[in-house]
Image (cartoon, rainbow, N blue to C red):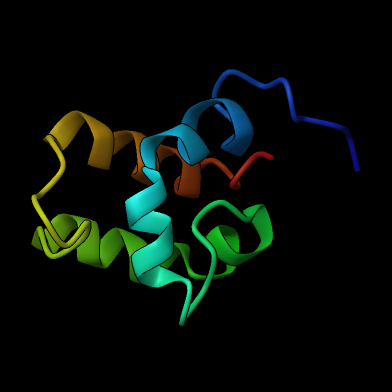
Length: 79
């Protein structure tokens, strides 16, 4: 598998920074939003909550952020 950690559309560069420390901490009892493996495994559930506006818990993301997460997920979840 190729090392995509520097991919500008990958998890490390584009997705992980979307989640604040408080977002991560509020979800740690279920999974780690800063973990590629966890975010990738739960991407469908995360996206559903983002689309509903119930995640993060304090306010909904702008549609551009939700769209970015969806694109990442649909494009094979590059690391």
